[in-house]
Length: 387
Image 1 (spheres, rainbow, N blue to C red):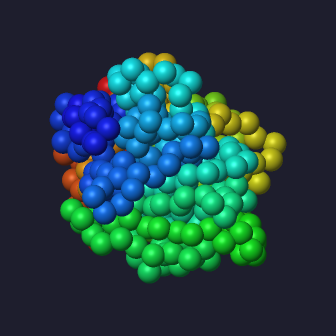
Image 2 (image 1 turned 30 degrees about the horizontal axis):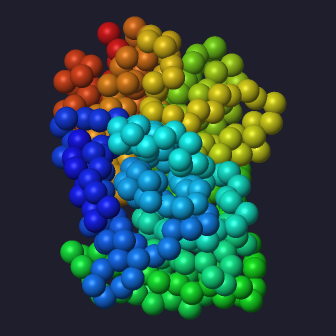
């Protein structure tokens, strides 16, 4: 936990779940820059926070926790991250902000009908930004204050073009601590075309039982415009599931891995879980289109925390190794430990990952065993068995 100090005061903030080994903070210079601008500086007056304030992409709740006590109107946070939303709840309570002071919405829920102040933390995914701006554009009016923020490495010409095409004329601030602000003037007369997401496409011929079938991708999920090569490699080397096994697609993304298992073994009970609301919505659509008579469970949550100990036969996992733009193995560590807890004796965890990440070392330490199932110059598929 760390202290974020702003012109309005200080907040104690942490990511979720808290991990004493994690050195990453719950905010960065882009959050600080935006908060400083909103409070006002010697060169700029304070930004009025009356009316409805919508904060999009607030990663760990730093923005809404800082703003909640100073906004005259209702504050709404819109997030695609379950973990980010949970962090926001904890950080609001930690800083004695009343539970009703901030309305928490997911990226899949309807945004407010009117927005008077729109604050956008630029996401890593340009597709997610596009979808968010399209969804919020009808709520923006000529007097809406629209400000985006991000690190310099996150704001590109394509980022600014999205704001201009969907909201209105756009300019940027000078950089400060490698962060930058985006100022956008709403132009209500712009044509409203609606979001192009979700995107659907047919899977290639080398994906086994899924060949030629349609996958659904909501904006923001990893490799939403095409099948990523790691998953493609995994699909060619999946274990043969037989009988009424309980299988989990952990970090399911668009759900192609779990859907492949369900098609190959109709008796399997498959659970799709991810911390992204859009990912689980994508998985549910992918499964529904391809296994219309099948049944499955779809869980937005923190790994396998919703599943009891020793209740699963097989866990399939392609773990992320980034948290936004920071490279970290925190998510993989937690996923592997969670899988071991949830697996029955003799149950198996199958993992695909880049060879250089060295997952075999951690799996062998955790499970006492690790087998290389398949490999190529870039990827490796590993199997660990719960003894």
